[in-house]
Length: 307
View 1 (cartoon, rainbow, N blue to C red):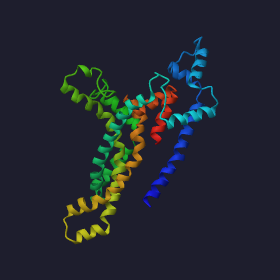
View 2: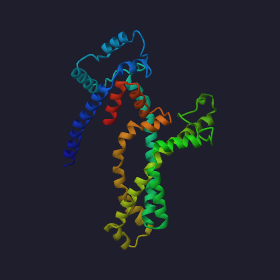
View 3: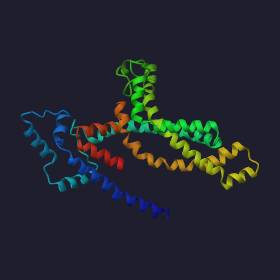
């Protein structure tokens, strides 16, 4: 039964993946002047006398003058063989650029998931135990307000009031390390990296509290009303044992299933946040590639994220 279910799910992945890649391919082809922008930079010399000749040579080099179906089949050949060629911006291998960006995105997102679950689970338990109390209602209201705040707006406000010379100037504006990182002493280097993490991680974490904590609360309250918890209480077990051994163990299971939905963001990254904080992850790479019409990098990122 489980093998049949797994095979069915795997087979469903195939048409989904084909659909995603096909839509991405044709959307890219709808963009005008893509080759010129990618090869000569976002502000390519539109008035250059030799631009037409340059375009012809580059289009022939990348096979962009081939019929659409030939380009589409070549795309699938590259995906199947994991041959994504080179970036049209800096002519570096696409997989090398992804190999540099992916660990950064994974680090940020895994850290975010760890912090969110570490805080949301006890928060949900607290809200379930104190359901309908004044403290629970105030806490729920605060969490909903945080959930409603747009991440890009919060990012800009934090940068303005906590990272600019105009106000407090407590944290760096962008990047993972300071420009003078190599000149710092070893103990300063240890603190420099976490110092750069505070603002972006804060923005990545706060929005998930309301959702996960409320989800944990409802799951925990359902567990408290279950027969096995009533049986445990009837046996005379202490309240802490009933809550943290019997109820908690089963109420956390639904939260674990939510991790599957986080996989695309774990790999694809956050385009807006990585761009605002200049984090060299997959999100920023995707943004820069889209802005510069770097088709090969876009297809590679979409392929990896889709899988």
